[in-house]
Length: 114
Image (cartoon, rainbow, N blue to C red; front, side):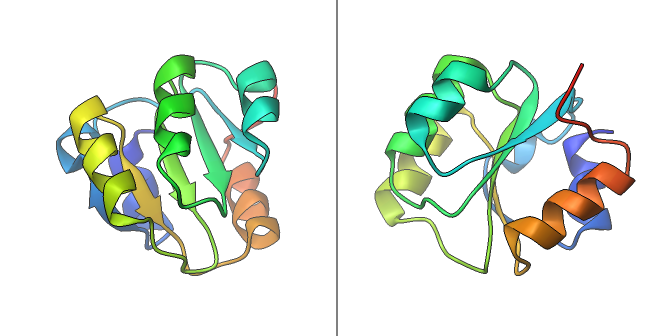
C-alpha cells in the first residue's frame, strides 16, 4: 500500500511532505520510545506515535521510515513540521488511538513483521 492510499483509507491529515506520498509502505511500527524505534524500526515502516517533538523526525530519517503518524489528534510542534519538510519525512495525524489505528492497519495488510 502506498502512503497516499493510507491517507485516504484512514482519513489522515497530512501535515507536511505531501509530495512524498507515492512511497510504498513495507510494514509498521508503534512505539513512543525513540530508542525502541531506533532499535526495531525498519526502512519503509510507517511509525505510529503520540510524540510531537522534532526528535521524531531525526529518528524517522535515521531509520529511513516511510512516514510518521501521530495519534489521538495531537498536532506536531511547528519546529517538528519544519524539520520534517527539510528531511522529506511525511507526518500525518490520526484522530484515533494507537490501539484502534494499529488494528485497522493490520487488517488492511500492514504488518509489523516481514
